[in-house]
Every structure is written in C-alpha cells, then in structure tokens.
Length: 437
Image 1 (tube, one colour):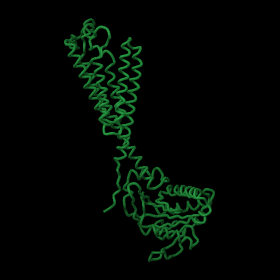
Image 2 (spheres, helix red, strand yellow):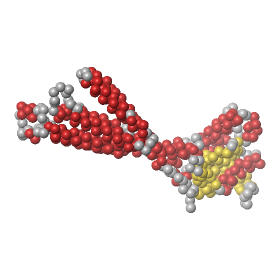
Image 3 (spheres, one colour):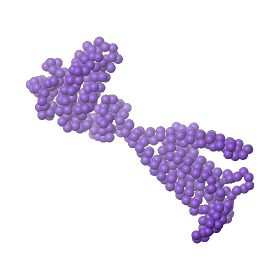
Image 4 (cartoon, one colour):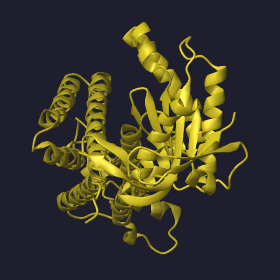
C-alpha cells in the first residue's frame, strides 16, 4: 500500500483565522474603549452641570465593562464572550434610543430621537464586528442591531399612543399640510423606520460577505506559507521560489513513485585534509558558500539538490519535478559546476569537485515523521552515481558518466568513451564516459 503524506491543510488555516479573529476582536475592544473615553470627555462641555458628570461617568463605566471580554481570551469562554460583547453594544444603543431623554428640561417626545444620529451607532458596532474576521459574528451583530432597533421603534410607538406617519398625508399635499404632518412632534414615519432596519440588514449582509472573502484569503495565504515552509524544511533554503510554489501546489510530486531520472553526485576532493587546517566555523562557511553556488547551478538547469552529506551532495533531474532532457541538463550542470570551481574561490579557498552522473529508475518519495521529513532517492541508480564519483580517483578524471546517461543525452558533444569497467556491487561492467572540460 503506497505511503500517504499527511497534509493537514486545514490546521494552518484554522490557526491563522483564529489568530486573526482574536487580534481583530482586540482591536474592536480597544477601539470601543477609546471611543467611549473620548465621548466621556466631550460630555463635560456637551451637557450642563451636574448632568455632564453623570453622562461622563456612564461612558467611562461602559468603557470598563467593554474590556471584560479580553479576560476570557484563550479560555472556553473566549468565543461566547465575543458574541455577548456585540449583543451588549446593540442592546445599549437600543436602550439609548428608547429611554435616554432628548432634554433635561421638559419632556420631549421620544420619537424625535430619530431626528438625531443615535441610530447611526449601530453601524459602528457592525463595522467593529468586521474586525473579528468572523462572518457569523458579523451576522449575529447585525441581527441584534436590527432586533434592537425594531424593539426601540415598538416601544416608542407604544409610549406615544397616537402618532402620525406618511399615510396621514394626502396625495400631492401642499407645503403647509406637509409641514404640519412631517414636522409634528407626533410624527414617526414608520416607512422610514422600516427602511432603516432593512438598510442595517443589507449592510450586515455585505459586510459578512466581505469578511467571508477576506477569511478565505487569510486561510489560503496561511496554507501557502505552510506549504512553502514545509518544502524548505524538506529540501533546504536553496530551493528556488518557483520550485517551492510548484511542489507546494502539487504534493503528488512528493508521494512515493518510480521515476526515470538522472542523478548527479558530487564530492569535494581532499576535504579531509582541508578540514584539518580550518576551524569548524570557517569550514562550515566555506561549504555553505560552495553549496549555495552549486545549488544555484542545479536549479538553473531544472534540477534539485535532494540532500547534503557532509562535503557531498546529490542532485536529481526529473524527480520530484518532471523535466525533459534530464540527462542533458545534468551534464550541463556538471560542466558549469566544474568551470565555477575552477574560476572561483570559496571563503578564500580553492575547491575541486569530483562528479558522478547516472541515469536510470529511482524510487523517490518523502520519508520521516510529521515533524521531520526528507525527500529521499533509492535504487541502484543512486548507488551507481556515487560509485562513478569514486572512480574518478582511479581514472584521474573529474566527472564520469554512465553509458545510460550518455545514451539518454544522445552522446552529447564533450563526452569521451573510456570503455567498460567493473563497478563494486554490480554484476555487469558499466560503460564509462568522461566529461571533457
């Protein structure tokens, strides 16, 4: 049964949205607190003494109460507290509409509250709920605002008893008649009130859809970023961005499979002697500079460095990403790497590489635990590439290729046939080709 790679795509998405919801709710709470404190400050000159003290104190109390849901963060009450927070604000606005008088003097009909901007506070609460990045919370808030406004209208109608509406106007009324009805202290205008409720519902729906789209963008970005980091954990930091994106978007490339591929195995010549001369940190820096440069060459030719082993590395062409002419690409990479090491010093040191290239079937796939994965190649082709690299010592060469590689490359220019040679752990001799500089 083929090995399946676990891809918990939803986990990073859920974590990202949960983080966004929490930070957004915090912004909503802090924004509400700042607004309440500012309104407390304006109350001192917006009302006469001593009413200004009562009003300012009320706003400060509401600011303090609004901070309470933050204490529920990272507890089982965190989400319920958010719903309670926005429902409370909707109810407070409704209470202000219904019961807070318009004047501290003689009684003024409460229906005239709709001539003020008190009902506009509903929209502030809905916009604040958008910060949570939760469509359900936005809808919840909008429903409470609609219900609160409807209840306030109902209470005011009940308190008024008799009232006037647009229906009390005759068809094509004269100006004086219009003024007498619409500007009457008993005018309520039920059609306008119903329209306000419907507008709140429309704003809520649009806001919820916008949040839904934004939420998906956050999730998609989180999944993409998780995939990118996962690919870099598997293949290392030198993987080109376009390769990371392609591997992350199609993880089928990483599942166990048999592929015809060309493998390039490279090892640093005289590394043991070099390591005895250099401090460890200097030695690591030299190798990192070398590997960075050679990985760039491999990537430009469509290959991928699969793993590093001390001072050696193995690169694959046509696995995991499919590429045409993989044998030619491997040969071109080897030629470019040899020229690079001839012309450049790494950390002030000249390095020489020996390279073996083999073409054939390989078993490729991602192995390991969920916490530590690696893309690995298995098969005789892998062993042959390593054996060919080692045979460079016997033939005083820098790059040896198998006959299968030369055949797959159409016996490319710059290859010289050396004859058949016995290779350790192989029953039949292998045709050897040397890559000429």
